[in-house]
Length: 296
Ligand SMILES: NC(=O)c1ccc[n+]([C@@H]2O[C@H](COP(=O)([O-])OP(=O)(O)OC[C@H]3O[C@@H](n4cnc5c(N)ncnc54)[C@H](OP(=O)(O)O)[C@@H]3O)[C@@H](O)[C@H]2O)c1
Image (cartoon, rainbow, N blue to C red; front, side, top):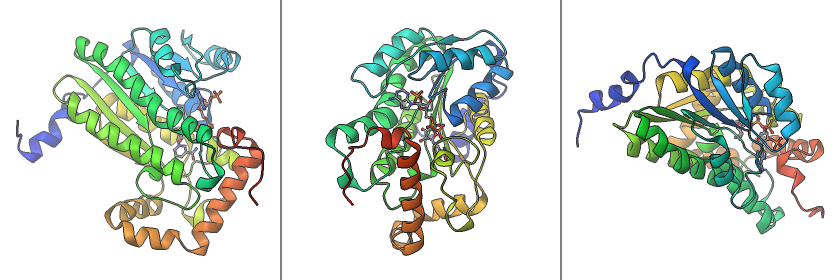
């Protein structure tokens, strides 16, 4: 079917206008993290009923108790084989999915064991795919639903010491865009939210690194507002970052040769080394599973 371009672009958004979150059940993965907590709060404040997921049942219960409304918790380790399938079963019927769980996965490629590489791919890419595969059919049967994938500007343009992370986020964006085309006309939407560097909470803040060359940062609350907008209005993608970061990421997509040359220079290498060192020092998800031995 070939719709005129203007109509094709408008149609999915128009059909999702005025989605009321107050009567929706939303599964949020990575709910205990810096962005997940802000997302959960924003959704709960709009009256959504949440199924909150991460690995620690205690942290999830504490989060649930702190939110307005009644919510469920469903602990799951998405890095384990079968973890995402089990979570989909435990979550039961949900109207929407926010696939937010992620790990940083920074570091030079050779510093990753095969097991660590697999974990990063599972958590950041495979789990969102499996959750979408498991939950989308129920949404299609209802004739409505929304899946929001938390990607990153790292899914648009690549940086040093980020090959694994970039691969998972580029992959996630491609998956989400293609899934959206498959779901067109079903009443179920798929959106991407792509944050840049986030201050105050989350994996970048925990690394203690500064934003590269004054590119600025955004906040968990802005990311959460973008997720609310994605659930309500089904945009294709929302980039959440100051204008210079967004412009550079989009330039990187349009002219990858130029971006790779810029990212191969000293400034970018120093910045990403700082982020990687911060993740290791903070014992964040990306470094916790790294091999103990140092490669100097
Ligand atoms: N912060 C940023 O600057 C930034 C920028 C762009 C994109 N993002 C993306 O935003 C999302 C959220 O990141 P964040 O900054 O909030 O990170 P975070 O604070 O480190 O939180 C990560 C969340 O993912 C969960 N998680 C990690 N490994 C898991 C596993 N094996 N199984 C199940 N859950 C797991 C964590 O829960 P437990 O550890 O308790 O299991 C936690 O709830 C990620 O997809 C990230 O790539 C973040």
